[in-house]
Image (cartoon, rainbow, N blue to C red; front, top):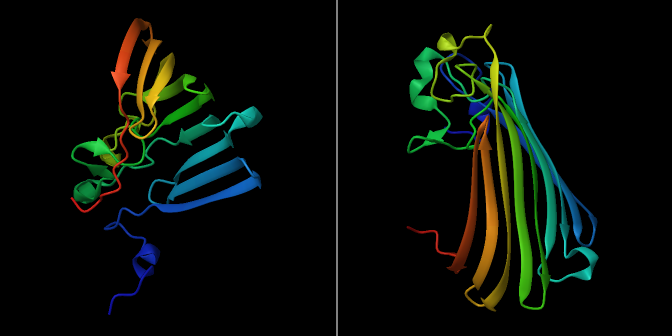
Length: 205
């Protein structure tokens, strides 16, 4: 007879189990802190997320400010050679985080609105372990070079200002600047966009 939660206690070489815990606390009406913790008993790894979100700062409607820190040990989502069919992935992509594991990341994002105009920003900096140190979720633990540690950095800066044309469909027009830096490779873009952001509440697909 199946018992909910019983498999979570079955820690052995046949199960690639990760334990998770999350909580959030509403400090004030519009200020929330949140936290997630993940533990992998097979590789003694852990992942942590800590963030704070301020809704409608300075009484500015349709605005928010969010600061978040994420870290994940190398081998957090790795598995043993006999668990290759138990990767934490979907269609060849990581489920938990696009960087896999073995990284530290800081994010700053937000939006400030006034009537129909807005300024929006999304800044991200990450330090990532490289060369089979466990950041690759599809690589078995047996193949990881535990004594070789190299790092790469990634910087992403996106700032744009615009006007909301239709709140029902989130149609907007904006102009902005984007910077992407991967180690010493630097790219800069100036963009003009006209887009909508439709919310799909239909999940039965």
